[in-house]
Image (cartoon, rainbow, N blue to C red; front, side, top):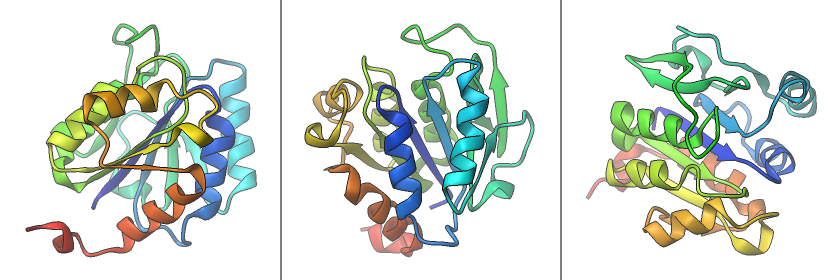
Length: 194
């Protein structure tokens, strides 16, 4: 695996905090994160998350190398889509998707195209369906997909839509997602290859 991508909306701040606190340290992969959050809360949230976890959490800068972000959490800034292109982070002002910018679908679709089976993608609690189609793209490209289960989701909207599309390889309670991401990141990729 080369990259972890996570998307969330309603209930997402508490969910991502729990996941990050559960990850093994040092975590070997870059984590790209889209949360539906607006200013002025977005910048404050990134700073707060940085202080609450053992990981560096910051906003994406256009042009940064994805591989240089190993062991860090890189968030999409409010009002910009975060995508990957040619191994670099790109911020775009493309139209909102599902009324959302940043959009989880935009990120998931880009990493599915670029990294294929080297992606671990997780869709967390949230209203609507942003991220469901992108998670399906990741699964079709051979990446590993996990969604938060209904019982632990504040709003079981986005994960539910992904399950209905057949995009979810594993549906887990929130407390199991961090350990699962750690186990996958530490595992040898060849173990999944038939």
